[in-house]
Length: 267
Image (tube, rainbow, N blue to C red; front, side, top):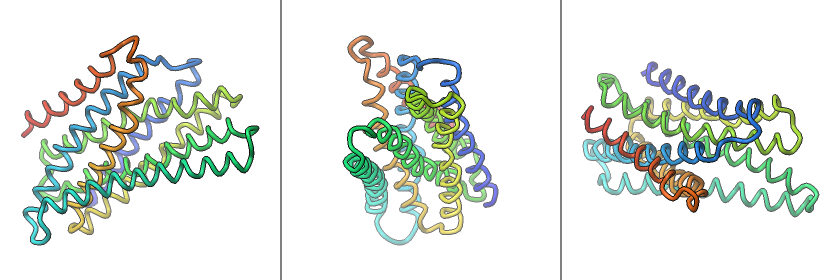
């Protein structure tokens, strides 16, 4: 069981490292390549959508059916909706805080407030992403460390890691435009991903030591990931749809297909 927590820590440290790589681009480039970022966002969203079902919802349903208690359909639906609701409340909280700060300081501080709230919002939504990774690795109970289960957890970490790269850049570049040094912009950008290892360890510990919540936790992580993918990643990657109509869309399809292929091959 300790190995599960350790694997969750290593995986979330990996996703933080990808955030740091994205933030580091501010040192070498004036602005990121929008086509590449959109492709990565699309690919990550495809992986996350597929992983939400095969690696999270499907195991949640199977575990709920095996356990004596509430019906599996209730457990999966409740956990999924609660995960999405958690992300929605998080987003609304950040938006409300941003409006209050802007009203209090006036238009002079509006640009700085937008940057502060950008950092806070990305940091905040990294928490359920870290929890999702932690839950996936925490679900690898003793005797279930086979290739299929491990690959499912790894693909969740990879999908989240890929979308962390543009997130790191999305924090560091606005800071650079506001006059911060490249080093300081990088430091703040990478710091936005430090909550993922903490949340990952917490998620893994909860699942390992409170096994009854596992089906709910898996469904919760799926709901949080679906909301992030549909509400944030897909609209963001489609910004250049007029000039490149199917570029980001092919990234979504490719990410979903890859996750599906791996699951079927290992299943």
